[in-house]
Image (tube, rainbow, N blue to C red; front, top):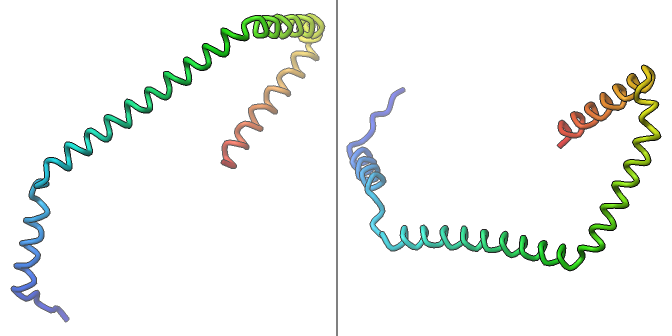
Length: 115
């Protein structure tokens, strides 16, 4: 069964659709919104600059600690890489490195599917 739409409802719908198509009357609201977005953007950039400056200050105060730690890490990597270089050059070492690499990739894919 089909019910015809009354003329009253149709006129009310037309009025509501016409009001929905009108632009916003309050330009002050739009201007305030644009200004708030710009202010938030400037604040975010200011925070990033502040964090960068703090990192540089801390790094400059701890230069000797940073350099000695870096030197120790480079030395440790050099010692371990020379010990492992003979193993990597053998076919067994190559196969072992391929297995380890495959395991790392499979684990990364499994973790990305879980999250």
